[in-house]
Image (cartoon, rainbow, N blue to C red; front, side):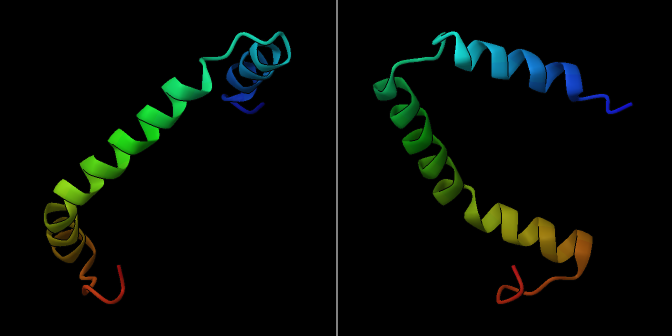
Length: 59
């Protein structure tokens, strides 16, 4: 059995019940994620190069 089935089921039920965060909150979270990824881009590239021997173009 899929270990995530219960989680997905609960999330789907919350979505269908309208128990979601306001759009403004979700947009703010996505913008914050984008800023975080921009700030950590070099660290991410270095980790991928170190761990997986991936160059900048590959990542």
